[in-house]
Image (cartoon, rainbow, N blue to C red):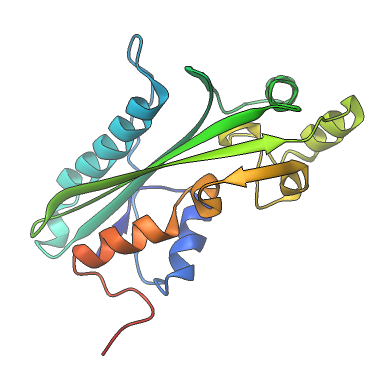
Length: 197
């Protein structure tokens, strides 16, 4: 049994790309605060691991064949995390910071099962935005598309038209890098499309 430790509809949809449409969604409800002086790449790795371990411990009723998948995504500029905005004002501030500049999207995926224990892979993607006009920023934030999302934008939505360059994993920016996720799930015995007979 596969358990996704995330309520993100984007991660659920990406699992569907791998042919996985039968899994349980059990969010981790974890405190995602950074520790003092914790670098973005360490924070995202720690959070993915802790989410996987927490949900694995909480789902013992599903037996020894359960496999838990967790992920975390964050955006950084230098050593500083660009927090996910909760309102339009914060979303506008995010986009003004990203406008005409490059930023990093860190995504870490953790898979845990009885047979393999915890395995984890992290992906770094560099994304460059075009210079955004104030009108574009206002229009995008009014749409609400970027609220609650890392960096204040959704690359699979309209904000994808602001991207000048992307070096890394597009699906990692969405929230679940497919190559790394597929590898981890297969190592835990999960059948991923296409199945080789």
